Length: 191
Image (cartoon, rainbow, N blue to C red; front, side, top):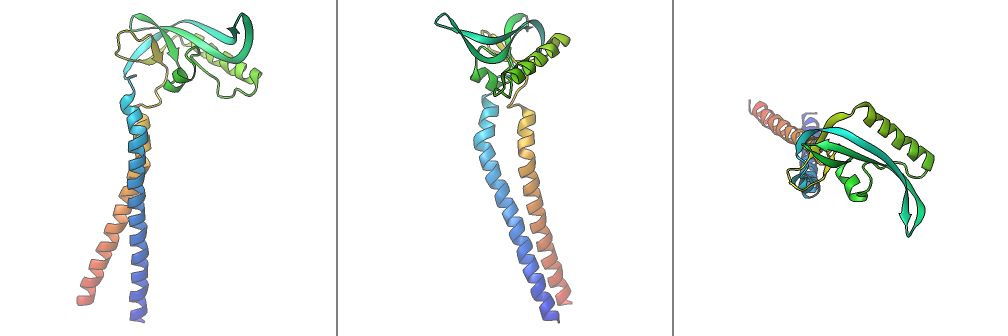
């Protein structure tokens, strides 16, 4: 009976060690992936200065002129603000600025024109309700754009690193507990 118990303990310890090592390896791989994808975006972000923006004007753009003809386009919002003592164009995020320089806010659903237009109208109404709000600007002198929300800020970086850290800590705790259990069982067997 005692020999079967020792064998069962060994199998359980082996499984626990494998789980702990797998968790540590998974955390290391996740850290590597985050270090090569999210961290460079965070380091390249120049939108570090938080300031107060005051709304100057909003405009909904839903038609574009190409060669003298009006071509329907998805509706988007154009917002001009005053920030740090100068005029600037407000963009929702870094990606909005990269997608279309002529739009401050692009609705998420572009399939249905009426739904997209209603979404843009709702955002425009919110800007008119709160004409003073926080925004992010850059320290560059000639930059004429500001962001409403940063995608690659310190909060997103910490949120991205939370689960791998939790996984690494859990894996190390499992390994340490198994090793302590093994050493205690050896001490108990020697008595």
